[in-house]
Amino acid sequence: MCKDIDAMPEEVRDRFKGLKVLYDQVNAIDEEEEKEYRQLELKYEKLYQEVYAKRAELLAGKVEPDQDLIAQFEKVKTALTDDDYEKLEVEVCDVKDIQNMPRGVSGFWLKAMLGNENLNGAIMEKDRAILQYLEDVKLDLHETGMGYTLTFTFEKNSYFAGTTMTKTFVMSKPNVIEKCVGTTIEWNGSNDPTKEKKKKKVKQPGGGKKTVTKTVKCESFFNFFETIEAKDEAKKGDGDDSAEEDIGEMMDQDFEMGNEFKDDLIPLALEYYLGVIEKADPEDGSDDEDDDSDEDEKPKKKKGKGPKMPANMPPGAKGPNGEECK
Image 1: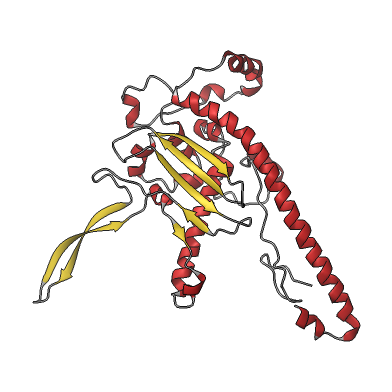
Image 2: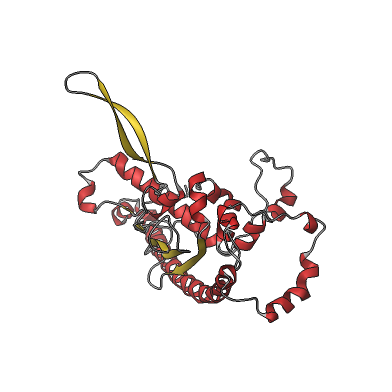
C-alpha cells in the first residue's frame, strides 16, 4: 500500500498517508474489541454451563427436580400459558420409548434437533435410531483463540463403541476456520450409517462384465464428525484448485452446522423440543408484513461479527463485503 500512496499526486499523498494510519488504528481497536468480547463470552459461557449441567442431569434422570425450581415455575406459569397451550402436542417418536426408560426424558435431543430446520435436513432416517441415545450436547469455548468444541454424550448402545463424540473448530481469528477436528467412530458390525453397499458392473480382462459389491460413502448426520483440514501451504501450489475449493466448502458447511448447535440448539433446546419456535415459511417472502416480522423471528443467543478489511488493501480495492478501501 505504501507504494500505491507514494505513486499518488503530491497534493493528495499526505492525506492518504494520514488515512492509512487512521485505518490501522481502527484495525487495532477492532482487534482489542474482539479480545474483550471473547473474554466476556468466556465469562458468561461458564455461567451457562452451570445451568446446562443441571439440565443434563434432569434429562438423564440422574436427579429429581429441585423443589425450588418447581416453586419458581408455579410463580411464572400464568405468564407462560397462552390460549394454544392445551393444543400443544409433545410427540415421542422413538424405538427406545418402548424399552425400559423410567427416568429422564427419552429422545429429548433428537426431537430438539428435528425441530431445528437446518439440522433436520442433515438427519437421515437411519440416523434417528442412533440419535435416540444422545444424552447431552455440550459447548466448550477455547480459552486460547476463537474456536470451540462440541461434545456429544450418548448412552451405551449397540451401534458404536464408547459414549462420546466431539467436534472441534480451531480458529485463531473470528470466522477464520483453520481446522475441523472430529472423532473416529468405532461402529459395531454393519451399523455405520455413513457407508452403504452398492452393486456395480465392471469389465473383465477377457471381455464381459462382472457384478461386484462396493462400500461407498452416503449421506448421514454422523459425517459431521469427520476431520477436515486444509492442505499445508507448501503443498498447495502442486495441488488441485478444485479440491482445495471442495475442502473449503466442506469446512464452511461444518462450521455452519457447528454454529447451529452453539448459538441455537444448545441454548434453545427446550423450545425446539416443544416446537414453540415457528418455522420460516419459504413462500412468505413479501415485504408487506415487515411490521410483524420481529415477532416470528427465531431468537438468537449471540451475534457473530463479519470479516474485517485486510490491513494491506490498496485504495479503490474491494473488501470482503464489497466496501471500497479509501
